[in-house]
Amino acid sequence: MENTSVIPDQLPVAREILLDEPVSPAKPTSRVEVRRIAMPPRFAAGWHVHNGPVVGSVVAGTVHFQVEGGEETVLEPGEVFHEPAGVPVRFDAGVEGATFLAYFLLADGEQPEIALVGDASVG
Image (cartoon, rainbow, N blue to C red; front, side, top):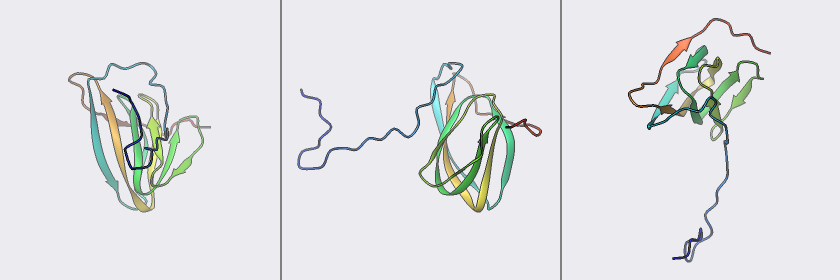
């Protein structure tokens, strides 16, 4: 059977890479937990770390996003992000709040964890 990305009588399926990020260090993953998270306007989650990598996309509102050592960016609906495991990140809602999908890569028996950290050294 021929493999094709064209559905008869329809336009081709469009595919666009939005994120291609290495998982370093490599992590055995047996499941992915997806959460829809809503933050009220101007909610500051502050600097935090996760026990595993998190990838996601903004659904509504805006997010002020920064990975330790990097520049702050403002994410808008449709934009994607990567929070590396064990690396401090800042993820704060904009003036209209924010809703986003977060995908947690988890090993057997593991649950997503978050730990708040003091002021991270950025720059």
